[in-house]
Image 1 (cartoon, helix red, strand yellow):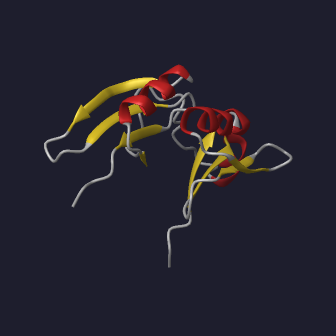
Image 2 (image 1 turned 180 degrees about the horizontal axis):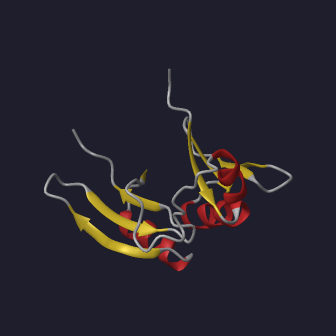
Length: 130
């Protein structure tokens, strides 16, 4: 078994793809012609977005809308970069909300958190040195 996808349900798949392309530099890999599903070119594991319409079909009993929640969901995706401050500033310029500014952790890693317009929580971090 291997980890294949992280899929986030969002109100506007194309807008989420556009934000991630502009804010983090991930090119769009695929957008379904109906606009209900799209993927980014992120490496071995795919970051994908699906419409809230699809989520309602998959989870008829309901689910938590990340973009509608006052607080970030209890999960995040982490994007590794050599320059957290630059990545953080770029994300804010593209419409992300700052959760915490770049901070050096006791183990030497720099970390910040932003919340994307679609509600997804993103950790920006430098590689962990062993």
